[in-house]
Amino acid sequence: MKIISREGWNARRPASTVYRITWAQRTEFYVHHTAGPRGQSIRSIQDFHIDDNGWSDVGYNFLVDEDGVIYEGRGWLAVGAHCPNHNRSGISAAFIGKNNPTPAALRSIRWLYEESCRRAGRKLLRRGHGQSFPTSCPGPRLQSWLNAGMPIDDEPAPKPAPPIKIIMKGGVPQWPGRLLMVDEPMMFGEDIRLWQERLKTRGWNIDVDSWYGPESRTVCRGYQRATGLPENGRVDKATWDMTWSWRPPQTSPEASADR
Ligand SMILES: [Zn+2]
Image (cartoon, protein in one colour):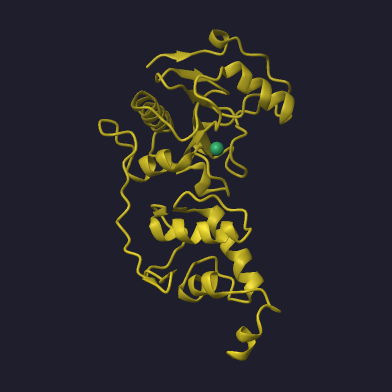
């Protein structure tokens, strides 16, 4: 697989020292998306990371475009700026786009993963950015592809999610009986979408993407804290029911008369 070198995409010199590590220190392989448009130039991403974020260089070790072309970012053994606390242990590949990876891009990311394992001399843990940091990166499609084991011959976005049957009662969806929590593979489904949507309409800052990742857990904890539930970051029956039944105090007199 051909990698376009930094000279090849007209990279700037790093603005400050980029530190180096050894393969012995690498244990993880991170997948990201840039969350920008497909076809964005590597140089403009580097400029943004240096000039706006104040980083020493483009944050990722490698970048991959929609045609599967691989670009050298910081390279194999540089400490990155892509996931707090995992920039030394984790090497990173970013798809240039936003939740719309192409089969060609998946093939190249898979190749980067295998080449990283080969160079490290052992299997690296495959991770999506959102599995280690509260972010929706790398988007549900890349995350589900990671969960499915990075298949490269099938459709770009396998959806392994089991269908979840939601029963409505008086216009309120009933708890479907599974505990929503951060898990591996990441949980996905209609129940999660409904829960996220409900919280969003009630003013909570949450992405309605049907995935229960660290971001959902953070919101869940905040919600449990606000409503006096045990703060465990999991949507259990009590949390689910509260999401639909809870009203701010001092509402209608009927609500207090019910007690
Ligand atoms: Zn990311």
